[in-house]
Length: 160
Ligand code: IPD
Ligand code: CA
Image 1 (spheres, rainbow, N blue to C red):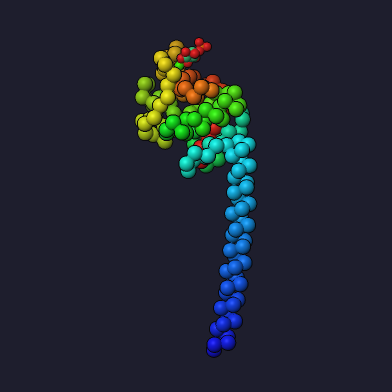
Image 2 (cartoon, rainbow, N blue to C red):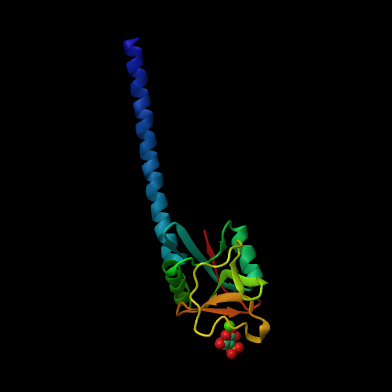
């Protein structure tokens, strides 16, 4: 029994070692892919990843595209996240939509997921609901927010 047991143990040890090697290769490849991805089209902040496809859409389309991809239109919840988005917007030199609107109740800005916003970075004198027609929010290249029409086309940035 001793002999048989030890050859089974050896087989098991070999299988575990091979699996560890494969896992390490997979992790290395994944980390490299992530670096390339973040370098080209995204930003990582904490556990969030912001990604753009570089194109501009109205808010409804932007919202649908992020949802279909399993994400949400980007919503900065703190200064670090706002800065990461500002960097994407500056790189593309195109303002983006945030996943924040007052479509439900005029003057009360909420996340697309429902709650009232807990962080904001409005430009001075904003939100002003210009012409009574500004229920969406754009992020400018200076990192400041402006309420704007949802039918304008802005850079798509989703968060995952
Ligand atoms: C407007 C101004 C205003 C802002 C509006 C914009 P426009 O641009 O920048 O300060 O609050 O959201 O639409 O219409 O004067 O080119
Ligand atoms: Ca405005």
